[in-house]
Image (cartoon, rainbow, N blue to C red; front, side, top):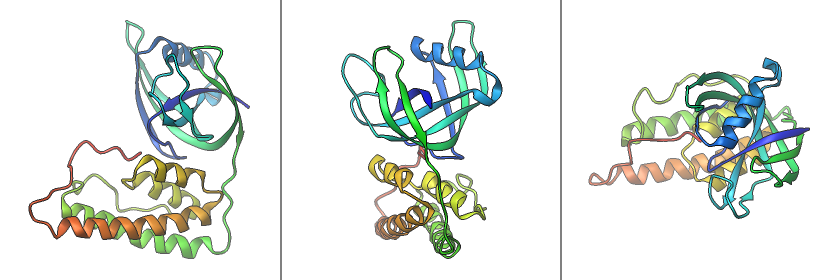
Length: 221
């Protein structure tokens, strides 16, 4: 499949919300072209940038090969041509080719499945309990407000894995590793590793009265 690409300095997951303010002419054109499509076809590809700038300028930005499709949910147009949009992550994909002949990148992509196994529910239970502790420790350490995160976790292991990946405060490399994990079990296993590490780090912060975690703004991506 062919996708218009939106390179960003963040990772989008299936089910994740993506608010964007569109002001560059190339991305205005992308949104305009998407609005000409039927609602079921208004999607583009979000890929994280390994190196380079968020905008595609004169040089080559090194893109990760696994990204996530984003489907337009709401679009507010301004008279000067800008847009405020809200998109939602839909499906993972792997890029096999990127066309850089235009200022608006397009990619050839293959959608990726998210298989689960009989082990997934047990892994999901461990991840869910540790993620709940992680959020509680962050609140107690002042890292997030009490209303920043919902305590209600998805019941489906695959949905839970993406929910936790989206909700953890991690660097881009770790975020991308969670997106690129080959299946639900691999993603949940990696999340257990990250959560154990992050819970230990938050505990260290909470033991230092003179140090506060940054309060805002946090990006869940």
